[in-house]
Image (cartoon, rainbow, N blue to C red; front, side):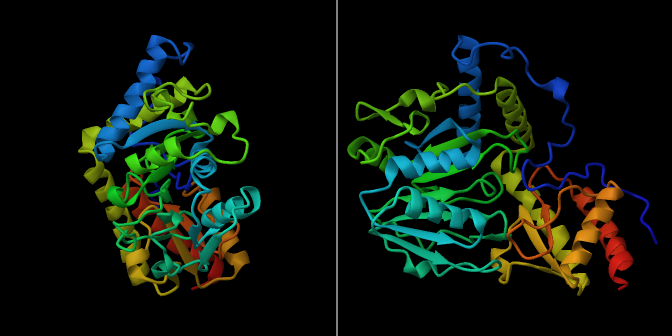
Length: 372
């Protein structure tokens, strides 16, 4: 039978992601709108976003967090262009974005020694290949594969190289081992449902030391510059952004951070994502026609949950269209380079009851299309 109850919020996109429960645009602080980002009001708002982020993430002493342009992609490119060069580079990839970092390092920066360790969708590469004397690039969570790291045990505490981690769909939803991470990047549009176009870069003291002791041989675009006169541009990490940010997006991000703070902070956000994954895990266990794309249970993402169906690619597309037509779920198709299937966002802003209702409708849609 056709279900009666629909999700109150049918937005399950993996980026931009659903807004927090109860979100209202008119609830945002508006005193900085129409003001210069370099005014006292503007800089105070940006500094507040940085302070709340550092506080909620519980960054170790000496780590620096800054707001940069270009979303997570801009933050990662800034890190690679500014830091890479003095050491060989190991790149681990298991989905499209990690592979993209390899192409940028090998084809744009054209570094002399790049080692690429790649696995297909659903699997992780062999991290035992990581050389602690090399710089290392990896994603924490494969947004397009639904495969995430269980931990950072494979990273040496005695490494001489830097670790650069794209954590855009992991931060705020998965515990990160900060002492193993020298550079972390993310965007606001993922776990907390912020608006796009802005990125965040987090630097360890080791990364700052590299920046202040190494000058890349290639021309550095202004938008990527983290140093001036051989010293870190401290203003980036105090709210003095490189280019003009959207103060509306900043207000939106602060709203999400304060919502998370009201729930109990980082642990609450991680628990919400884990509980959402549990809803889907129980459904998968009870229905033989659906499975996780991730091959190992401990690597299943609790944010970008990727699923395969006993159905043709055309049937999957029809199911997705049917759910959208019924206003039950928007934007849940697998990433264009991934195997045909579903990708359901389960970050902290998604409600468990909405997931339960979606899965009831998914059963109905599957039966309508596949007759099972």
